[in-house]
Image (cartoon, rainbow, N blue to C red; front, side):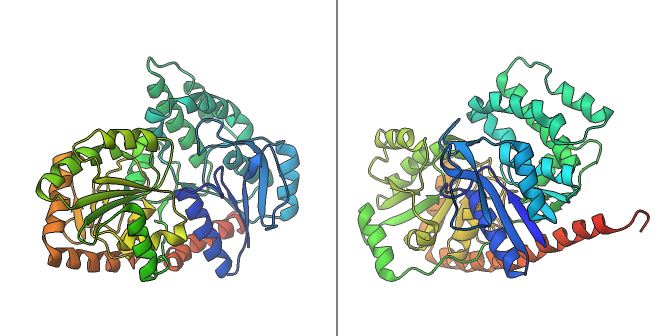
Length: 426
């Protein structure tokens, strides 16, 4: 089958959605499908040629609202003709923005089966990025032109514009109703964690949506040579006896990373060799570095910056424990990576991942400095516990390989495509 993946974020951006799209393409192609990616251009307002004729890029304005968001610009009828010429059998969209909604529009105009993959907790992001609210207004306004709406849909859509006293409350109301309307028009919605499943089901009061829980599969990263890990340690000034805890991912305000600083203040009082390494980048890094420099743990909190994903094995190999304080992720792919690297894990959200089990391969604790410090210190102090946790991490993550999870996605795709081909009453 010909499958179209529609996303408003793609390479050269580095984030979880990009990783998920690449994994899905690779595995679906390995299963014999032909996959096309529809995404924003690499450079501002430039469509440009692509070295890969299965990646179709649209002109865009880079960093329209914040560093990791591009505003795509295109003429829908023209792009619809191009999509029709390709002859897609199924469309999957990952982002409910310009490119994602183009996929929705094409699916309904051309009668193509439509699947949503809910990849970002937009409901929670509004709190930290209120600047996107004007964009939500625009997207909500285009909805009647994107999907076919009945009287009840129009009534629900109109309620979206009822004012709220707080901008955040209005933004959340808009997201809830926009996504529920969109998902109700899909043949299926892939959700990546029990947390997202509970959230979306709670919004779907009429039971119009079909949800399928299929976490993204992750394979082990390339095993780093010893010299790569040593080079990583030397660049950060890590001494042989240092005890290293680590976070890998976007350094952004919604990830709850501020709690790491007082956590480290607690830890270093008992373990002066303790170090914490942030691997990643984003607009919040500068503020977080400044806060770390002014804390009692200054000198114990280090920033490695952004690394290519294929080189992250060297970072994981330098750590003894992985810490993930975020409460607003939909699945946390880095948890899979850290578990496959054999690391014990300390995290705060019990429903965001299937690869962390409290007391088996780490600890799930409240997002307070004292609770996080206690959990990390227990692992530092007990090498046998750390070894056992690390071994169990590999076992749990091994249940969710890219191939295993892609088979579930492929089966869903074939099912919805097959259902559309059935005659009425068949």
